[in-house]
Length: 226
Image 1 (cartoon, rainbow, N blue to C red):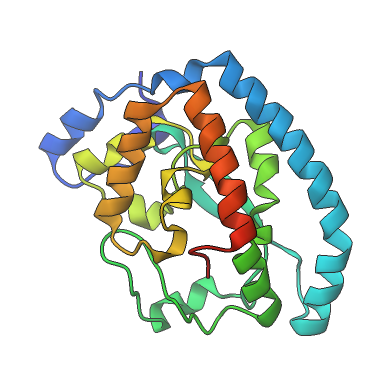
Image 2 (cartoon, helix red, strand yellow):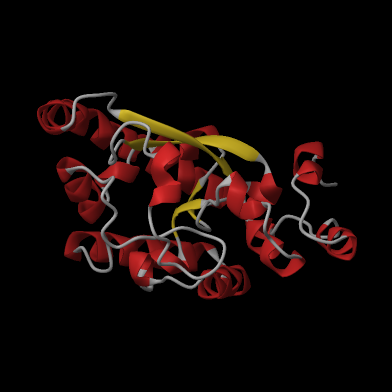
């Protein structure tokens, strides 16, 4: 069964609608071992986040005073909306200024290599991936997983065709194929979809663990991040 929330986020074309409604959650969604790893990882991640809060808050107030956290509605499993949390890396009201910034990505997502809305501390947080640490809360709550797909925005999902909806058959993740295969250097949405569907085909608990360890290496090396 597809949730009523999911039904409201309808792809373009009535024929597509009939196709995507037949999609069922990926088998990884029902894995108790995966969920246990998510909970364990989220607890460890949140403990690290608590350690980071004070120095990040001080640096942020020195650089660009304002709230330390940023939240946005994203689409999760089967398109169900949820509120994602991050350490704020942009100026206040950055979302309202996005239309002024050139989109360097191709397809249904937004990327800009030198986005002027990113603050000085925000640039550091992004390069080190520290901005994503509050998402361990989303993992603990079950809206996200440690490994999954990149969580799209509502605006992005409204442009999806049936094929694109398949990427939402798993929970969005803190990391995934896109994280270890280019991160922000991937600017073609179709490539993101290809990587997400490849993850679903190759999924196993062991593969999740491999991606987690690869992500740690990628983050420490700051490869592909901006």
